[in-house]
Image (tube, rainbow, N blue to C red):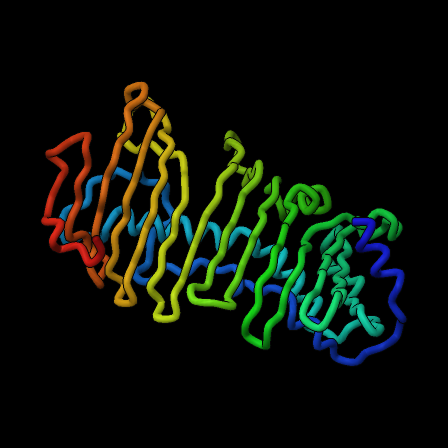
Length: 308
């Protein structure tokens, strides 16, 4: 955060010119994971819940659920950045632009945003927050990283958001703690996003810290893939023991796709590894399912899968 304060104190107060450097800041779309298709409930159903042929595919639904949750997680930080950028910079010099400080009427927090141009294509950005009655020396880092801007629509970068600091400033509205790190790149085909959750707690009583990495790629024709891990009651154990599940979902431009799952631990026998595959069609209906635990759950033909 010291670098944020140095940036802010270096600016010339009073310039209200629009800042083109703001365009280098990452947006929600830059880090979005876009899974095609039908609506998906945000419930917590088992990854092995039965779905008959023709019903919406279970692994597809889980993929949609996880992508929606990941996309929604950094929303409080983007809200603050967008609020700052809704007005011209408060101050500006040859390499720095600064917005704020700004405080919502009912918020206990004051925020500031700074962008520093390193060279013609590279930028650093910082969002800081502090209790609204506290001195500037107490600003804490909430959102920050680096960006490489190729042109108006292409770039790459890294972004970190700090829920622990946001929670310390406004725990009533922001109960989550921990952090999320993003890497994004849309300078080539496919566009890629990597998301890492570190000791993340959403504020739900009894929840356990989430440490997980999500990897996403999207091609120009909107085909893509999404790989992630989670802990879920895969085998519907009545005691609720959670298995470690890794799921890779892939889809074509039509939306038809396939998920391959690996599950271990929990109530599964020690050293036992479960493999399962589900395929769905362009309407996201299951056309094939197989697993190596219970053959009675297998249905459909692998020839119906759009992807090998």
